[in-house]
Amino acid sequence: MSKAGRTPFVLLVVVLLAGGLISLLLLNSALNQGSFQLSKLKKETTSLTDEQQALQRDVDAQSAPDALERRARELGLVPGGSPVFLGPDGKVSGTPTAAEVPPPPSPPPAAASGAPQSAPPSGAPSAPPSTQQSAAPAAGPSGAPPAAAPGAVPPPPSTGKPTPNPGR
Image (cartoon, rainbow, N blue to C red):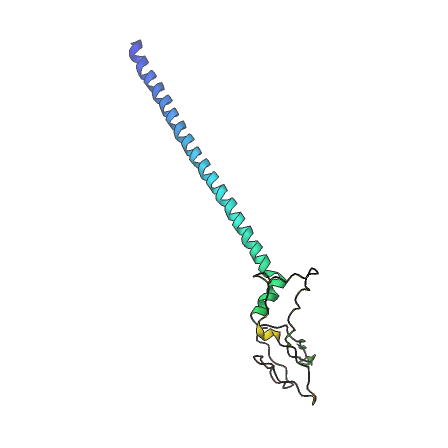
């Protein structure tokens, strides 16, 4: 009877050991798979962070004042005239002036060695033809405002009434 009672116990111990080893193997495989996935996600995070930083540098470069001014000139925009303010009591303070086309920027001086100047880099701003006209005087000899430059939008006539501002 001692042999008959011992066999089920040995069989139970062997089954428990085999089950434990198989469960450890499965647990180890799951941890390794998670480790590989974590490594892959870290690499992806690094590449996306680099891409985000590159895009932020591009945004910063295009948001710089000189880049905005260059782009505005390429679109034919000119700096505005003096502003007019509408007070809370409805009175207008200031006198409006039309925007004037500034003269084109002067080219850099030639090199002292007499070498010919090279062409500006492709990213250098080039003023469109409409911005190369000289600014007109503020008033003509008779005190009347000067004629508008070709392609310029004339300011609205002043009625003495405050104009509503739909943006507020």
